[in-house]
Image (cartoon, rainbow, N blue to C red; front, side):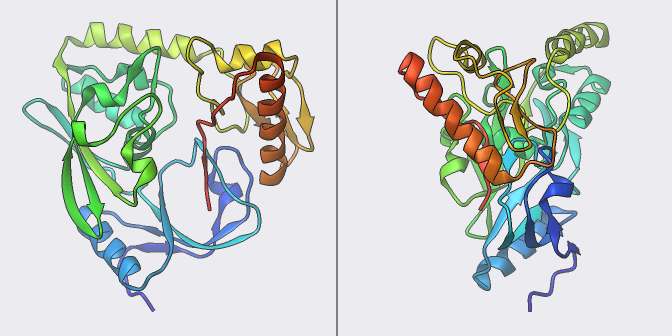
Length: 287
């Protein structure tokens, strides 16, 4: 028995918590509220050899169907943020909205491209989130992680950042927080930048989704390739390719994770058959 002081939820319902609204359940979820709690929790889980995954808003993930024996370490309550000499230090559970609100209050600019992206900082750092050629790596000074249960500070150069990729996707590091490097700016200009990015995202599909499913191949847009292959509206059970943006899969009729995975496979095969381009998923498949 692992004795941890942080809040626990048993079982953890993936359909209830994920933005795609599907999946079965994890054995349970822990909600540490401080760096000390998550350090203690992860150390205990590692010591007991209990499998776990770290998650934030569950917005760019596909949970599994059925019952998983993996525990979830949720960063949702890790929401501390403070100003630093070069910008801010924020914990992994800080949402993009909360981060941008604090930055604006402190007259700090540089993170506006995150406006409207429904992510936590931890999720953004994990996948190098961004839009229109701007990515979280470009404003990251360092990332604090738990490596083998011990706190380690990684310089951004050690994070292996590339397009929608990072070393964290290939390691067991648990992202705890990050120092972000920002610039002084007046609030009027910050507001204009935020509005610009909100407008860019206004056309995106509504409903239960994971956001963009595929990365953009070099020199092409995944959504345009999927649309060009005539796949808008393609359906497998309750999962359907959006008619508004073909790089979105919508769960509109109680889709299962298996149906969504099947639809993803059909899309990849059809795009390769027509364009000889292999689409690569942006989403994360959960164990």
